[in-house]
Length: 241
Image (cartoon, rainbow, N blue to C red; front, top):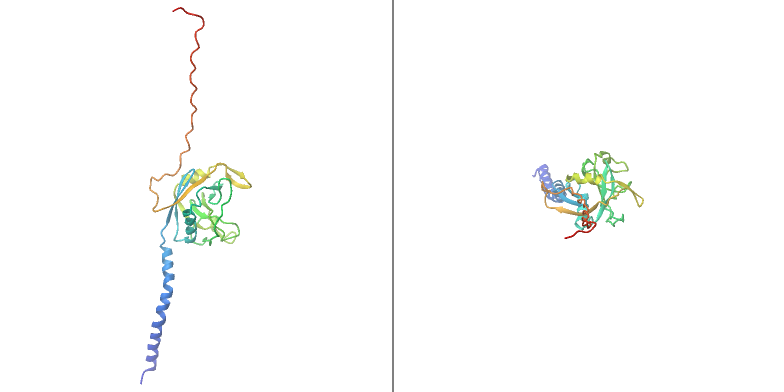
């Protein structure tokens, strides 16, 4: 006579052996995806402006949606010819959505706000700009913090502001942009009185070299040429040879 408990145990083992592998297989893609996200390599960017070049390291591991969004716009050349349209000293510089005449460019749909990714709005970090009261409204615009703005991490209107990278070289350029006088233009506040244009945003294969150029020297002042010395007037009177 068979031991019923032994038979039931064997049956349970066989059932478990049939059921568990598919469950493992089902869960495997999610585990792989999570591991890939954790190990995602940083993305390096050179943002060249009329003041010089800012080099960024984007955190694809902690802010994959924001980084993918930013790099997609960059690869399409979207940022070329846009401006830094809002500058507030000791706070931030904002750009990526307007052109020189303050016309606003068309964007894609807003993205998921990654404000809970553990990154903080510290000095030199880059974050997604968005509409107030609309957490998932960020599109192409971004801002670079020129102070420690950790209060932007808090959900003041239901969500904070998502950090997705940091400046690793070129803070002198950021400071030069921050120093430009601002005013009101076409109903917009804090607009630089000097056009600060983004000439290009390029995805780099590696971090910038130690001697990579940053702050662009201002154009040399042109000294007007001195007027030519007029010929001496002839002597008065006459002389004999």
